[in-house]
Length: 198
Length: 198
Image 1 (spheres, rainbow over the protein chains, first blue to last red):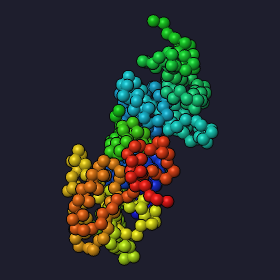
Image 2: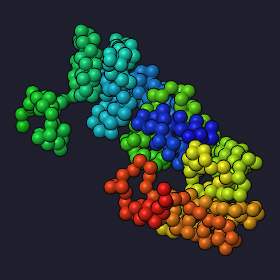
Image 3: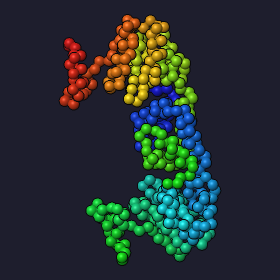
Image 4: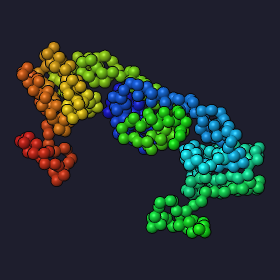
């Protein structure tokens, strides 16, 4: 369909978002046209600012407005423990939990040879530099329980262990509130292997 | 979850779009963060421009970059026929069809007392003014087959008919390629009422 150029441009932009095809993009573009001017201007500003104001912390790789980020620059945090996570959202999840007081290192991805993502494409090098410079006692690998997450954890663990640093990973097992009946067999296997006395 | 301010701002903006809740908005915001700078800047520009460059044609109400729009200002179009539609997208659908050479009038909605939308809230007044000023022979009510569309058509038809202008509406019946088996009874009733000889 022949749309006026500004609408066609906006439809193209919406289509670059994940899970949004041409029909949804068109619906969103026409919806945008009917939104209050303020909201649309605000949306436009939010988009520019998210790129202009946020960057990766030079130490941990987490997204931040300040340099270094508020966690890396907080002397009250335990400097001897680094938790390695895949994404900035994971840092936020652990911070919400409120039980962890160490530092983080954000990989911004996991190793995935099928997608051409090797060690150079994710934030591993700066982790090694960090471990060489500072006195870190434990590295917690808090990566997702996916094949890519597991193999990335194995890769990092092999890099770090020779330096004598303790490497741990999160406990695997049944999610709290979940049913044994619906758990997959690998989860059950891990839960049995990691059983604790009560 | 505590997000950096620019991310929280973008999440809020995404949540103003229809069908996008907090989870999807968060996913989109983090996805935006990883998009190429150019694409995000382009998206931001598209949003501002859709509001700055497009406005409603003062004659027909369709969205346009020029004033009046390219259809209203085209002398080759049949000036004696006006097709009344709900949305700009409907104009584009009829233009794609390529069989209609008259003018349009875009209501930007339908009467819906339940949602507080009366005749003043949609673009009806300018239609009446247009009919008084110009020699229009036929008004085609091309509104959707919804209860609101039907009652809006009835309302406009009652306003116009006393002036002696011919008022028509689109044929109702079976969609081409559809199955009688799956048609609803109102559609079937209309199809029987409107049967034509072959």
